[in-house]
Image (cartoon, rainbow, N blue to C red):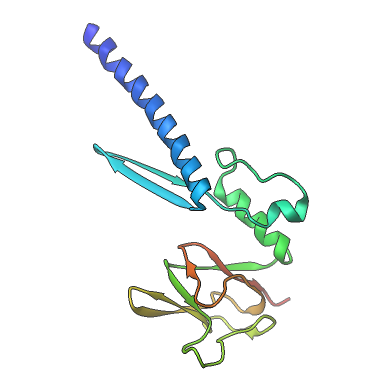
Length: 167
């Protein structure tokens, strides 16, 4: 029994250390404006991911939700709802890379706000590891809002466009 008691004590201390490390990583992520931090040490992997709600507090006059108490799926739809009609679909980045609205610096953009698009139509390009990846619309509709500036780095899952489906 003594062996089990001594084995249980390090586990409780280890849990406390993981909790403290999680809090520190969340604070660092918030301080540096990062959306995700992942650490691996001695066979243990810890990943802290947060959703940055930049426009929600100003639009509602409410304080921003706490990182630990609000899971990302409940925060992000609120941001989208503030910018466009509740029926708007979000086109998200399928990869990390650099967002481009056109095929070349002097070319016209693939789409503009207000344009009507078809399913499968090219909306933008994301450059990842020197490869140009065409991002297609998953549904037909009208471009309500372009959420990313040309040449801006994007992260996986970051909203790029708001699309209003046809009525």
